Image (tube, rainbow, N blue to C red; front, side):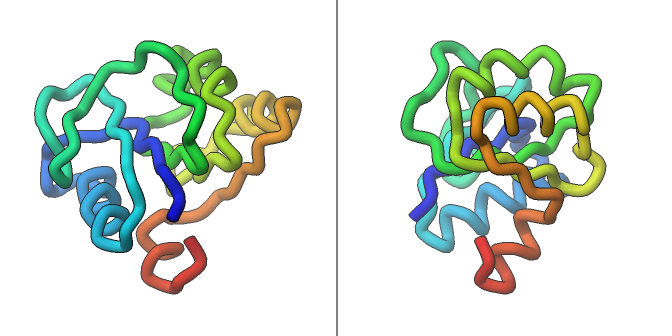
Length: 119
């Protein structure tokens, strides 16, 4: 199973980040919710980023490129194996930073990857 950091986690059930949290946990993946909203999603509290995590396989992005900039160092220091850029989060600058660090990047939808068994 792939421990996944959800950047842009929200307790709002109409948001894709919320759906992804529930589908990831239903598929047996451990999640870490990072966001600015308070609350829990899929039984996991939403937290602000603090110390970089060292055991993250995948980061799935649910914030746009402008908001991503403030997380560049945090993401690079977390050093996931891959970053998934969900629709609307595409960012060539972050892709370049990730590639320099040996982090795979994918332009895809986490929900589609899960539903098709490609996650």
